[in-house]
Amino acid sequence: MLIVNPETGAADPFISNLTSVTDVLWRPGPGGRGQFFVLEFSAHQSATPAPPGRLLRFDGADPQVAGTFITPVSMVFDEATSELFILELRGQIQQLKIN
Image 1 (cartoon, rainbow, N blue to C red):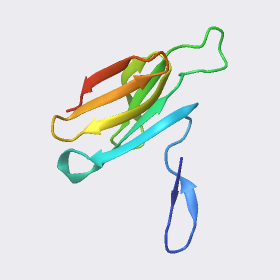
Image 2 (cartoon, rainbow, N blue to C red):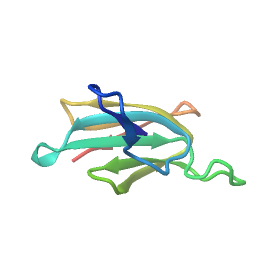
Image 3 (tube, helix red, strand yellow):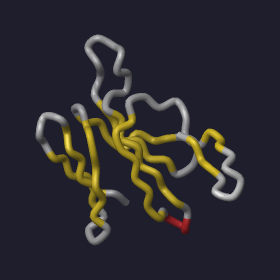
């Protein structure tokens, strides 16, 4: 992922070393800092068999694995309940409480 300066158009790496990203979500985090949640279809898609996908939480440059899922394809955040809903390709919807 790149971060782009809207004034100059310069692009710099922001979050790197990701594979098969299917969705990205931003929300205000604790202490006024932003949090990014990144959903990956598989942690290593070229492996046989491919391992599960994962949800990564970025409070800074280093991610934390917030959960693993089978072929996750999209997510939505409910601000009222602080819950994240993740849709898996197999038709399952997973619910995750976010602190």
